[in-house]
Structures are given as C-alpha cells and as structure tokens.
Image 1 (spheres, rainbow over the protein chains, first blue to last red):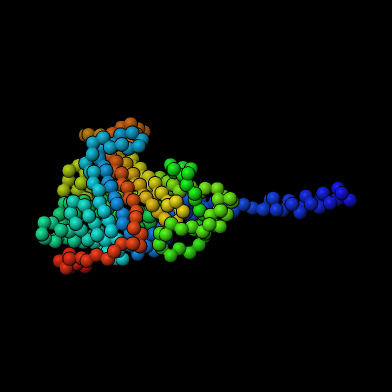
Image 2 (cartoon, rainbow over the protein chains, first blue to last red):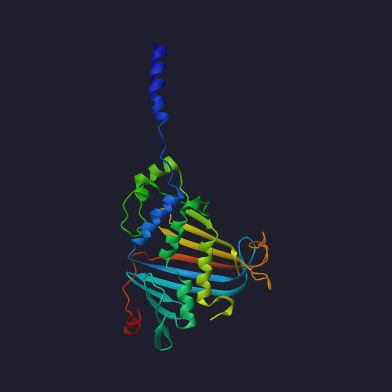
Length: 214
Length: 82
C-alpha cells in the first residue's frame, strides 16, 4: 500500500517538475519590441556623437580624426531640431531642411556644416529599421553593470506599452520574471559586412567630412 | 577606401526594465586602399585590424521620451521645410 502510494505520488509530481520553463526573449524579439515602442514615441531627445577618420586595431580606435562632432537632436511629432555647429530643422525622416547661417536661413544641405550635420545625424528610426533588417545576426552580449540591476521581462515584454518612460514596473511581474528566467540581457549586438556598411560610408562621403572634402 | 572589406557593428542597449532603447552605438569600418593600387591589391586579412583603416563611431543616447516641450520654428526656416 505504502509503495503504491509512493509511485502514485511520483507520477503526480513528474508532470509538474517537467513543466516547460518560460523561454527567455530572443534578441531579435527584444529588438522588434523596442523598435515598435520607439516608433510610438511622440517626442524624444538624442545626444549624438560622431568620431571618425583613420583607425587601427580591432576596436577601430581613431588614430587620425577627421570628424569629432557632437549634436543634439530634438524630435517632436514630425519636426526634428538639430543643434550642432549650426542650428537646423528638418521634417522627420527627411535629409534636407533649414539651417541658420549667421542671420540667414538656408537649405540645410547648402552650407558645409549643415550638410555634415544632416548626413551624419541619421534618424534613429532609420538605424533601428536597419538593425531590424539585420536581426538574424542579433545576439546578446553581457552588458556592464547588469549584475547589480534588476531586470523585468514579464509585463514589459508581453504587455501593452503606452510609449512613456515612467520607470515603474509591476512588482509581481518582476518577481515572477526574475524567478523564472533570472536577469535578462540588455545589450544586443548585430554585426554585418558588405553592402550595409558600404551604404553608411556612402553617406559619410556625401557629407563631405571625410578626407577634407566639401 | 576599399569597399570590398567593410564591417558594421550595432550595440543596442536597453533600459533597465528592457522596455526602451537607451543607447545605440554604431561602428563602421572600411579598409584603406593602398596608395597607387586602386582596387587591384588583394584584400589583406588584417585590413580591418592591425592595418590602418577608415572607421566611424556613432553614439546616440536617448532621453526625455514623450517629454519634449513644444518649440517654435522661425517662419523663414518653416518656409524651407516643404
């Protein structure tokens, strides 16, 4: 009697212990999710730095710089304001616009500073769209500082997003997510070569900032 | 610049709760063409590492999501936006 009860107990326990664990979100899925959330933003600020020139080493450290610029991009609805060597405006997703040169307003691509700024400050939406096209190459890489941080998968990964950064997370989901999956990676890496990289260089060349062109 | 040998790397950092993109780093690299050998030289295996090459580093840091205050565009600038 006792042994049959033990067998019955073991049979009941087996399906529970063999229940499938919740799968962690794949990097391509995470990329798709945050790209969608980004597209829903009504406004945001992007601080952009661009450094370029001759480089050496596998980290491509710049040894002889031709570009070392910083820009602030403020996007509000369809409008983008660019602040760098000159002040400029352009419509979201467009390359040309308006640049202030002295007291005058000119087409953004007319003055050298405006042309460089517009070509080098690619809309983040375009970068994310390109990353999405390359998503099959996406992988996670350990992100410095992750060890001390708490990371949520549950509600954020699967829930609706109203497009605002509140910093609030559901307590129960967080606990559940961490218990089931542990901290999730926050650093996605995509590497590619060939035509995609060439497209970026074409853009840099058209900016006129490489090799002192104008 | 030798377009036969190029590299591109995106580093996309998510926010603490993984709901947003916090930072995008983009590095593009292309081999430098050896002088006087325009396109004819055989690609070097070290063209994008120990050899001198061309690279660009872009970094985008995002903030103030959905919190930008409305701003005015000068009328002269607005005319050029069409």
